[in-house]
Image (cartoon, rainbow, N blue to C red):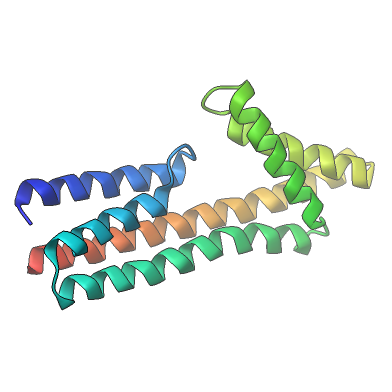
Length: 160
């Protein structure tokens, strides 16, 4: 693969890392996809071994991203329905408020679901904070996973 093509792969991977933090882009999927394209074009067992490692990291990072908020919510006593309402709020917020609507709608959905369930502002806010902490940890894990994927690809690209 030419240096220019590898630069394009790197740029797509960096866009994927941005997508982990800015939920408009499919973060880890972009990083993984760029790495698989690199392996496909480059061919050879070394390239495909890197693609395999990237695939394992993609699966682990994606599963962790969803498991942490769910465990955090249930640990705080919130049912899974709260996460469903939060997700619905995030979707509505995405279309109502440009850029930040996804986050605002998600937080509002979680808070309102917990407020209706617990009938207390303080208790609803405690549950909402616990869910947000889980989501934040999930994003952090996803970001670290993405950075690790880029580092593994970068090391392999430099070695070939």
